[in-house]
Image 1: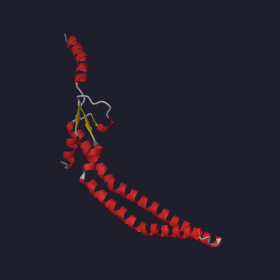
Image 2 (image 1 turned 90 degrees about the vertical axis):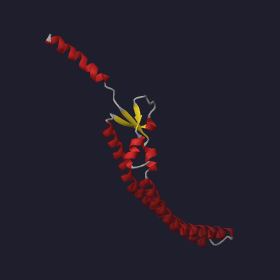
Image 3 (image 1 turned 90 degrees about the horizontal axis):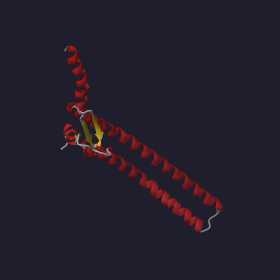
Image 4 (image 1 turned 30 degrees about the vertical axis):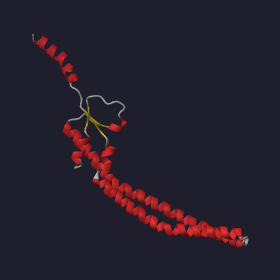
Length: 167
């Protein structure tokens, strides 16, 4: 008798375990990230930095245009070769300075972007993980990459937004 009960339990146990369905969630992290208030603040800061660099670049651009016009005028008036070469050298030096400035500005803006947005991205990841742990989900997937979405995948975007304090 005991052997029959043991055998029945051993046969039924895997069936009971396989009957348990896993719970998955889906979330659109890009959509949530874009509506986070911290992102708007970071974007405003980045806009101010970008505007500052544009204001600093404007005089260099104007000087470049002026040098180019002078160079074209000298070439049109058939100025001596030595004068043309000197003006060409001035133009090239100024253009190199301008390019270096723009590269440094772009590098600084990119670095500030990474510095400002990394903690916000981590905050989003933490919220998704917290919703997953609290809800007992086997996993939370990126809704953007799902090729098929069955009935047992719950959209947890609202829960993540609530965790972040977003309406």
